[in-house]
Length: 412
Ligand code: AMP
Ligand code: MG
Image (cartoon, rainbow, N blue to C red; front, side):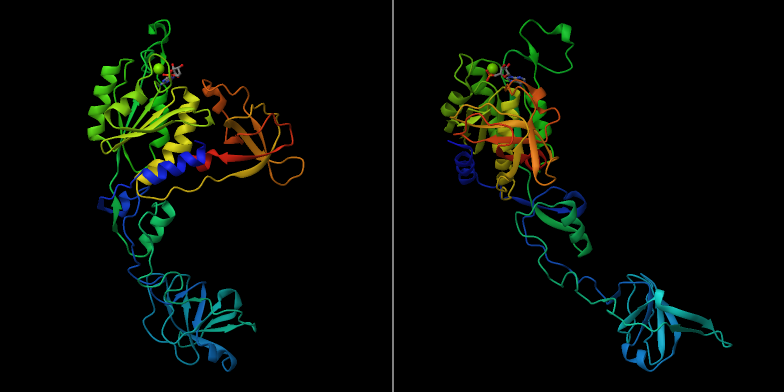
């Protein structure tokens, strides 16, 4: 299966978590709306001034020299009277436009502001063409009852701001799926163990930290589980137990065809294994299946493979599980600034650094981050994209056109 086929197969199988809960807007950041929320009031809720100036009647501008200032309207402190012929009210941005007024003359247009012997203020404006009325009508931004969300919308800070403005203080969101993360391998030790305490052949478990960090912003309950040893019975027991309390399990390592690779076989024994060979690099061995109601991803153990498969397959799958629609991969054309060596056969996702094309000033250029071994986490340092080398491509020279996938896009 190639990447797109794998994604389509995943999206077709995964069923969103449908249970919802009502939460306060202050808790809703990053959650997925489970309902169509409607504006509780029009925005603005009253005719509002767009500028600082004077509110008056348009019809008076042709037959009045000066206007008597009868009051003032500040944001939150409206003038409650009406504006009659020859009158105006001092007004500021966001304040209610008083009854009768249908024009704001900007304060920059004031020619003279004088107080007469009765203590009354009069204002005279410079001759000018009023190009607009500077009044925001009721509902100009959002109408009463306007639909603000639909089920599946991710509640971004921008959307939350709009909901707050529209008088929404709580809403129904999908419950967080429970997602468990396993590392596997007898060679792994916890970070924090002093280097001198590592026996020969032991390394730190980085994948469970990377995976948890990659997924932390998603609306899921993350559970970091005890590491799986390279022992088939222990793997079976642990997966069976975790599958009963999680909606998805993600393992890394032990998914290839080595003597100590039990993940695929265990998923097949406990449930169903849907596929486990992908035509992409890094990430060839990958298991996906289910144990009862729990989805299981068996990711390859090489740290770069773990990350790339998580970005391209697991994160969009989690979007589906969380109740939202995964966005299609955003491929952006760029020009190679470093040569790429590639054997036809598998699509490859190299770590790259893109920047604005220096020579032509338009478009993007991209270089890879050096030797692309799938064990080399250092190939991610400085990287801001993945360079997609098509399956049938051979070596590519500087100047060749490629597509890149932005990490900033994949990480959301
Ligand atoms: P495996 O698929 O289990 O053979 O693992 C492939 C490679 O990835 C081996 O070199 C493992 O030591 C390494 N590896 C597996 N899991 C992890 C992990 N959690 N953290 C760091 N390296 C790992
Ligand atoms: Mg292993």
